[in-house]
Image (tube, rainbow, N blue to C red):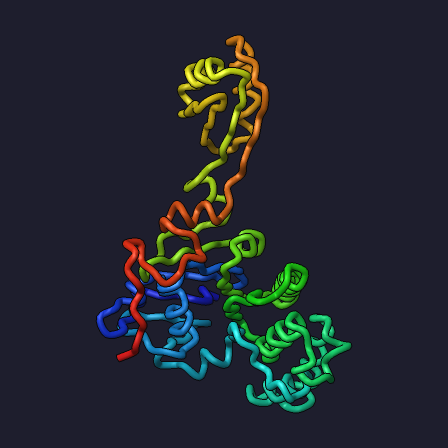
Length: 326
């Protein structure tokens, strides 16, 4: 069947700014991939090219087997896109918006009604589907947006910041709905988010983009192990004991500060018993043990030098210029 998304040297220039600088991507059918990057990194521009909203300056991209430049209609028929804003008209009823969306994709009225009913049921919108959109809560509107993006049963769904503005409970509910829908419909999903815990818990792969290039592409677990590792902190009763422990465990690359020894390693919980046995044999009892597992925030900071939410500036501190297409 081939990959759902394939790009080769995909590039986009805005005046003198190279927003996307030769990105190579592959996304397999059925995958759930998180595309991460700070503001100005090229993430949104990449999505706009993949959804046929803007043409690339150079390079190629295919979505669902169709070229994003030469076969835009075929691409648009096979994708769903849920942006950051609400897509439904505020004065319209939710069910009517779903029917209109289905008809716009060429569905017959009976087919659109059947599909709308399925989505209303699966997304828990049964009690509110016939209310006007303006009366819905933020979480209900986002679920309606998801339904509108899925009405034509797309092979590929782009979710751009789907949880923005939602409270923690609605965020958790929406994540559950996305995962269930993916399992039921085998939909390929490309997710962008500023909630790295969301990417960590949902995505099989995380692709990090910075300065228009892919700088990391792997599973969340492997990214954390490769770029950060676990942190083990061993506490002692005296500074002398901590220094002695650093000597005993010198092969593990630890550093002592005060009464604490800090070691970065892979598989921290598995390493602790052996360390404690070595220190006990050396007559250096440990007073406390703490193992900290890395997060995607730690990975992002290591890779880019800034947190994901630090947008609008480059690593040298200069502002990212406004992008104007030419």
